[in-house]
Image (cartoon, rainbow, N blue to C red; front, side, top):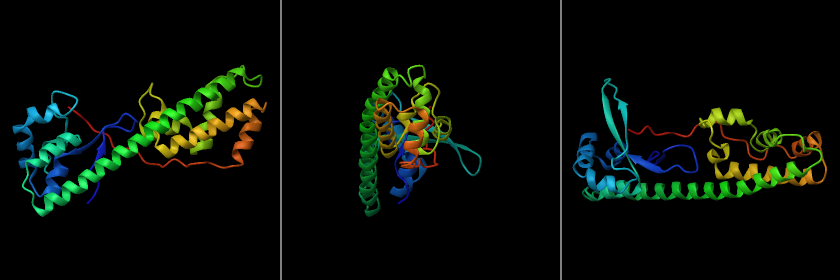
Length: 227
């Protein structure tokens, strides 16, 4: 089976979901049949989400018509599938969907843990910059810009564009667990080097010797359009 579960956005606070069309395709049903069930049991399904409605996006068909594609979280999709007959195809799909929801949640947990650890390394770096004679008059962002290049191979602006990060949001909220761990490692190393009295050029050269820790992947996460 192809990808069954998606994320509402690229941040650590994203929620996993599947769509009515994914369910229809792999359960062997029509788009209309699935949407009809969702409409019929809308009150029950909506209670299993965050809002008083079931999220959806409008997609254009090959014929140019608009169709409503519902977006269902794990609880919502699990309930919906209980309404289907347990044919061999439906059973296989249930199993695959359950596994992918689990894997996606595990990935999000790992990202959230890495994000929290990253906040500590960022605080240590800010403190080191503040207390250093070499960096006392330099803004934290001046040093921080080097961290992204050395950890991930792209600067902050490039990462923001790549991940479509909204203005005002922290870049670290949109990193994978591996990317966040690489950034935390560089920040921790830099804090030590600053405490040793190295200046910016010395730190840059020292970090460059180890190379980029984790080259960020040049791909954008899928996003949902709710309505």
